[in-house]
Length: 484
Ligand code: NDP
Image (cartoon, rainbow, N blue to C red; front, side):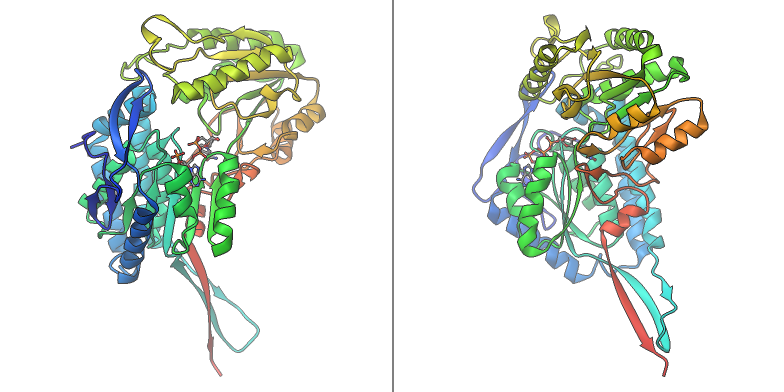
């Protein structure tokens, strides 16, 4: 049973409790700007209680020392429960994050798939045997890190929580999940589901509260062995600083300004709609959004007009309406920020080809913003360099392969990107040259449950998903046995 009454409480040590100083904050529904729930503010004392609960659960061994197959069963059960509650969870996520219901449903099913994958992976965390020079047998053990702090953003709340919780638990760690303050609801439900699935108490704790206090106390806590963070690059810098005195291990999934490169021989029937979906999906609030399109000069006008027409056609509306393709931004504050960038784009001299305004009428109460396309832009413009995190596409023309590679890599970010061409040699030369952690050719898919995901440069440290994620949540111990 999914309810929105659970907020107001923290999950610590297997029990639901208020924050020690009884403070709460409101959760706003972005489509209506109305309060949909309240959540508890975890004080530094609550954070400390959560860390102690996780430590106790970890050292108690009921999870960390359980056979991997037993851990796998609980993770499968979590996946089953997520699937059985998919409709309610999707509705909650759609309302809380403002995302179209069909996307929310896909994300919930993706979260179930993530738990299934790591249920399977739990029994496949292998060590090595190493032919050392000394006379003996040398092998490695992969052990859980201990207490892990998982701090996640608001754009894909349940998805990104699952990307962290599932591998952390598969490896035998105890976790403290801190969701974003805009969107804590499905994380709290995940905490409930994990208990119902048989996860021992204290192995997954869920605490809510502002990043500046709750998040800070968690990231700087000496009892935390590892932090996995997804969010803004500048918050990532702060996390590294907070972790430094304790030498806490840190992995970071940060911002992006991902390129979409369209050569003259690309199949525009596919590339143009993909360009639209890859930047306006989730109202552009996607770290992998292909927010910079580089298009060959010879096809620029045709491509730009197709993309602008596609943007105008998107159905904006109530996230709970099955026809909706684009919902509101997460908040009025976020919309103002994005509108500021639209203003910057106009001042910088790019051509505004579509969108640019906030709709009125029945959508006026929500933080909606039209899908916006700028073309004839230059790579040095702020709209081409800074992560806008909203429904804004910047199109930049290019002349040849050398030029586009130089432009594409001229950014502090390196998360994702796409290359559209029918020339396999060119596609592979570009794939080698583009400095991002994730690339797709003739596609805009960045995320595959089974494959590594993460960024180069200021887009992050470490790789999530697939078997790579297990490296983030395990220590490697080398054991040498003398045979002399
Ligand atoms: P933020 O960095 O603002 O917040 C992310 C999380 O960190 C939230 O839970 C937040 O809490 C918490 N937090 C904020 N400040 C601190 C602090 N000083 N110490 C500890 N925790 C803190 O990001 P957003 O939520 O705004 O998410 C959007 C950003 O996330 C974008 O830049 C986007 O690119 C990036 N992102 C990256 C992805 C990737 O995989 N590379 C995927 C998805 C998003 P609170 O909400 O209470 O402020």
